Image (cartoon, rainbow, N blue to C red):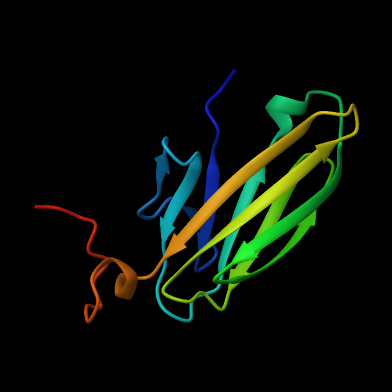
Length: 123
């Protein structure tokens, strides 16, 4: 099975910018600018096979998120991010499988208060 891929759109380009996977907490982490609207695209085509996405339920903390989905792709629109926030997407598949995707978004202010830099990059 291929690795999971979560893309964040930036100026209509799909990029992974300062993204990582937190194994301990089981979530994908991304850094964003203050007042940024991020789009996370979760493509489950390889995982669900011939089944389809039935529903997506979101639980948000510290941000606002909305979702739209097709038969195999979930698109999350993330906005109003405090210094950091999380979005848990509970995805139900037509054959009864359930998958939880956990995403965390952090601004430079959360990593390094008073900074406008992303801060996670080390030299």
